Length: 125
Image 1 (cartoon, rainbow, N blue to C red):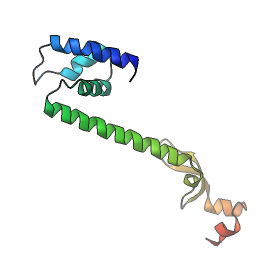
Image 2 (cartoon, one colour):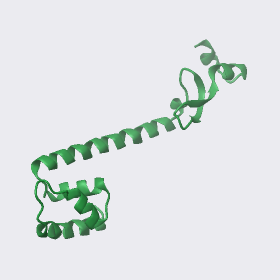
Image 3 (cartoon, rainbow, N blue to C red):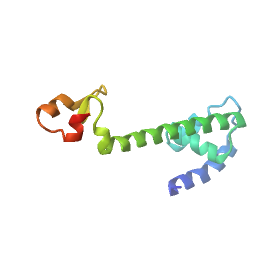
C-alpha cells in the first residue's frame, strides 16, 4: 500500500465520522471529490475502511473483483500475443499487427509459400 493511500485512509476515517451519510447518500461521489481520486480508487478504499452498508460493500467488492479479473485477462492476452506462436493463425503465416478495427495484417500462407519462406514440415501441412 502506498504512503499516499495510507495517509488518505487515515484521514478518511476521521472525515467519514464527521459526515452524516445515510443509505441514500452518494458516498463514493463525496469521497472522490474530497480526496481527488477516481471512482475505482474511491470504491476500493471505502471497502477497505469498512464504512459502507453490507449491501453496498458486497456490490462494490463484486465490481472491483470483476474489474481486476478483466484487467488480468487483458494483461494475459497481451502477454500471449507477444509470444512467437501467436504471430500465426490459419490465414496468416506471420501477423505483423492489427488494424484499429482489430483485423490482422501480415504475410498470408500463400504469400509465404510463393516467397519460399515455408520449411518442409510447414509445406506438408
